Amino acid sequence: MKLKFTIPLLGLALSVAIIAFQYVSISADLTQREIRHALTTLSSTANTLQGNLNSHLKRNNMVGVRQAISEVNFQPLADLVYLLDETDSVIASSELGMVGKMFIDVPHGIDVENLGKVRSRMTSDIVKREGGTHLIATFPVIMGFTVGELRPSRIGVGIIHFDLTASLASLHTSARRTAMNTSLVVAGILLLAGGCLHFLLTKRVNRILRSADSYMQGNKETRVSMKGRDELASIAKAFDSVADGIAEANDELERSESQLRGVFEGVADGILSFDEGGRITTFNPVCERMFGYSAFAAISMTIEDICDSRSAGMFLKSSDKDGLGECRGLRRDGSVFDMEVSVNTVEVDQALKTIAIVRDVTERKQLENMKSEFISIVSHELRTPITSIQGSLKLISGGAAGTIPDQAHMLIETCIRNSDRLQMLINDILDMDKIVAGDMPFEFESVASGDLLSSALSLNSGFANKGEVSISIENRTESTVLADARRIQQVFANLISNAIKYSKPGDIITLSAENRNGMVRYNVIDGGPGIPQQYVEKVFERFFQVENSDTRNVQGTGLGLAISREIVKKHGGQIGVDSQLDIGTTFWFELPLATPHQIPVLAKSG
Image (cartoon, rainbow, N blue to C red; front, side):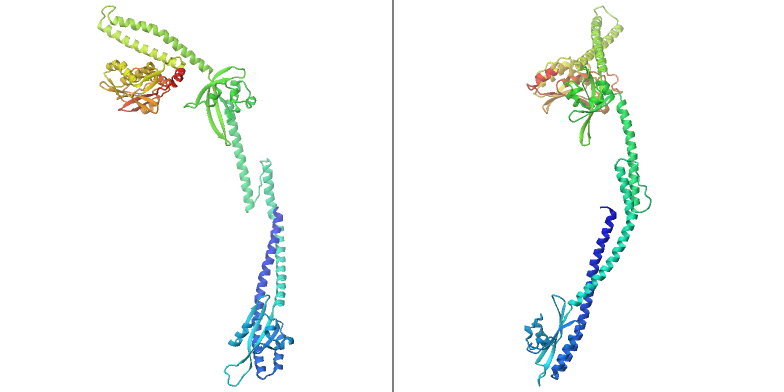
């Protein structure tokens, strides 16, 4: 409903309310005043009539009695007057037909018991009878004296009846007329005020509403621009302020979208997104060039359309600790290429959306293969001359070519040590290359965990003696593990040789084994200087060596721990290190307990 209709209706409702209130209040006030006046009049009339009746009855003047009663009956409010003798017989009345009748037979509505109280107490009484507004006054009248009586025995009762119904009805009519006149004046004032408000208020409200409708229909430049200091002007200013804020936010959003679009289209990597069902939702230009599909065509495709059948699931679940993974991409022409994928899932509009960054790594893979092949060829080509050099040097050192001077002997020993180190480096590089390429053979079998410890002790004791340290077994378990014993001894050799290098003469290296959650954990414990905490996570990386003042003279290739990690991973286990500075280091690795179904699985993975 419009405001210009609402205000007059409110005025009309207020007028009706005022009429009702005026009528009730005026009627109630006039009624109370009329009743109070009637009570006063009735009391005065009753006293006067009582005196006149007593005077006339004392002289036995019934004519005077009837005349006194008729005078009272002439009053506007008095409609019935009775005089009863001591037997309640009507001896005089304003209605002649009632004389001689018993009062009980008269339709008067007066409580007979009240007459007895009036006689016994000799007091007047005024009561209000329900069923209309009626006032009744009763008073004692002395009918006559008998000589010697202290109290008259003949006591009559005078009764005056006031009927206020007609009088009050007239008052109510007057009250209604007064209330109606007052309400008409108020209604006129309200209607005039409503007309003024229509021009002063509704016009301004409609202006705000029209501006809001225009804004909602798309005209974002709409403003109310209303002047003033009242509430409507404040609302208009708030509307304009909100509209300005939205316009500014939209401009900022457009700038952000433009920047984001520029990044999305200009980034060097492919960016695509897909929903929970694997359906592609965005496809940037790099993806268009990479896969050979336009963005419009790709929107209707799924992940399975751009990956070969073996890589689609891997693409959707691609992740490692860095959030990266690799899979095989499928171009429009049917060719397959290697790609690196980074996947992240976000929630948009209460739905999951996955964003993937893809990179064509075909060239990198080719370079890695070329590097691997180069390292493999060079390593193989170096192994033969190094072996020949080692053999020749050892023969010369043994005197096969005759006696050599002591100084030359020292130089030859230096050459032998460095050739051994070069041979070890070549072997480590070849082993790492085989592991990465998946060409290192593994022969899994059930092996007693204690036998692995004993073999590690016996195979590495000679090297320990050279370093003036000893190896001991602290405890062993009688469990059986699934392992390639030769490869595990290679792990032990790397860990023990590492411990020997960082131990002082006289130190003891401890080997132990324990069962833990379906695995057997092997520990190699030394009392060396320990590893700084910032290097703990890096010791298993290729060619990494901790360098400080205490370890700079320790020789090694930096591949032993990396090779050990790959070997343990091929066994389905894990490897780690716990170290404290100036206390020692514990290298550990875990192997699974032997169960029949694990042998073919690990053999296939090796």
